[in-house]
Image (tube, rainbow, N blue to C red):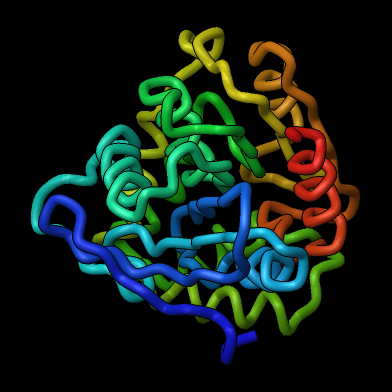
Length: 263
């Protein structure tokens, strides 16, 4: 997979954004990771694209993976959405199928509301219309970053059935995100609230939730389903917050079935 995956970068508003690309054809999926994630969060979906005749691009948001950080800005989900819009336009990907996880789902949802011309369809995974963050997580990220990730976030992010190897590898990846970036992103999530604008979503929408997700519970996904016209919900059993990593087969099946239904 690594041999056939393309690594690229593009400059958007003075910020160099790195990305991984796999596959070819239409439609094109733009994969948007969550806080403490990177383009590697989508490794199984990139592999699916390579094998299944789809095109997928997974970008690193500012300060993550190979992308530059910013001195100022990116304080809100709307700021991140503007950069991702620029990424889509710079590479001529519009309209794209936006697939967003957690914070990335908030970014994708924001783009669908404010720039619908860029969006062919929308996949919202383990996210919500409002993303409140526990006070102890915000305080932990600020005062004892490693402990907050290892003892607070990771135990809430994975199902009890997740493999030890996956959890340990994911924690290692999380801790590669600079503390200032992680705190900025979690604060952006905490202030995010698009509940009053869900009626403006026009794109076909798939919502993916997980039975064991403690960070963005199923009831948040049900709220999205009940307030986005024509949307449908798939709940993956036995997965936690990182459903695309914990249960890639089930996640990819839901994704493929949705995309095939667009034609």
